[in-house]
Image (cartoon, rainbow, N blue to C red; front, side):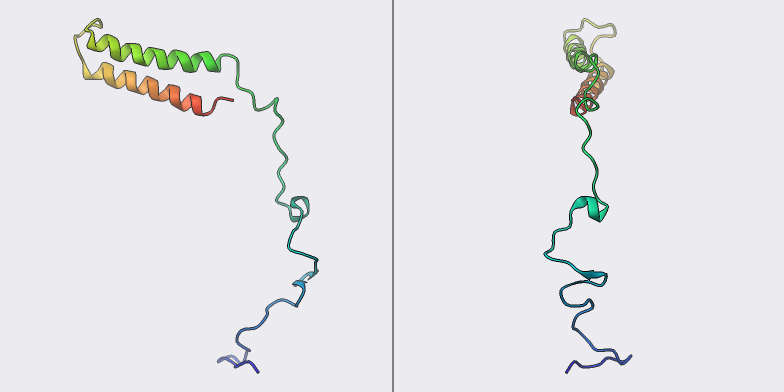
Length: 104
């Protein structure tokens, strides 16, 4: 016999009837996603395509960033060697990487 708590309820034991949920019995544990309400249809492959300009834009950003850093250290850019050219080049490269992570 189960012990009772302060409120007179039994401690431990089942909270749902044996063999299923409170709503009714079911066989096994698997519930199809359509029935549980958690199903999301896959996105069609035509929707998951990036624009044609997206790939060249990624490459252009990466190359421009590398050139900016390289030309800064070769003192070709105006203002001699500047930290701001380095920062701008790294930001442009970072933007290229961010775009590359979303490319499909």
